Image (cartoon, rainbow, N blue to C red; front, side, top):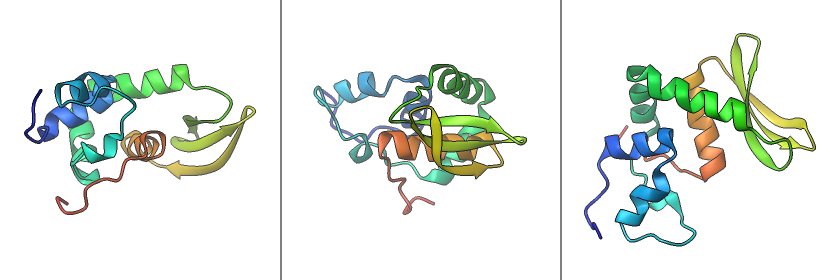
Length: 123
């Protein structure tokens, strides 16, 4: 079991590749977890990383677009040359928030879906 802080790049890669649970197991988190206590990166770091690695970013977005549910889940929807992050209620998007870039939409989606609070101290 590892006890040092999770490196920033490991955090964002785990978020984008869906391996966060695997990484957290290395840090002693085995049950239902609160990911936000392990995610110490800032929103701006996440955005910069996503812009620098379009393969991971596009892969994440494709998975979200392909696997989104229709009831009681957050989702990303492509609209009007941008993206909306919305809560799905019986197939109807509610509380949609528009984002001009996929990176902004992904950060908002992660914040909503995983209840992340990005670290503002490292901005």
